Image 1 (tube, one colour):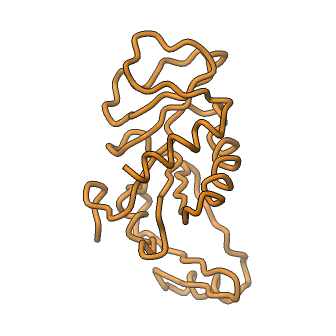
Image 2: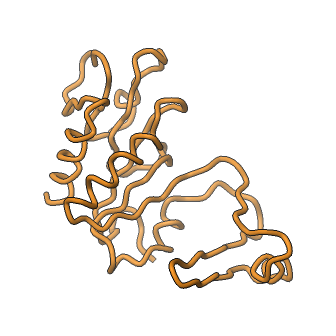
Length: 174
């Protein structure tokens, strides 16, 4: 199992407070990266209980019967359901271990902002939240829609997805 430090592919997170628009931004960014020829995976952290399986379906029934991992394999995608013995907040390294890295060029991460790996901070001025880069040495750039005081990191325009894509591509190829 790979750790964050020795993960074999570029790993880049997007760190922000709730309401900044992380998912909306990634929804616009990923197609641009794919157009550039990158094979992209995304890991999204949720603080909520998730269940994409449907009660009554075979995969659901087999999970409820006690299987701790169920792979639902279809003609267009596979889904891995992993049951934890006890509720816990997932670690990024656990999620990275699920990826098939030989088919990837880049892993983007939404969330896991308190874990140490390269991240771009997303910041919206109108939310009046403090900047994260001042206390997180893992942040390598700040994408904002306003002024960023006392910042020595690369500054990106939060509303310019092409600029963000260019930065991400440079990150992948560096």
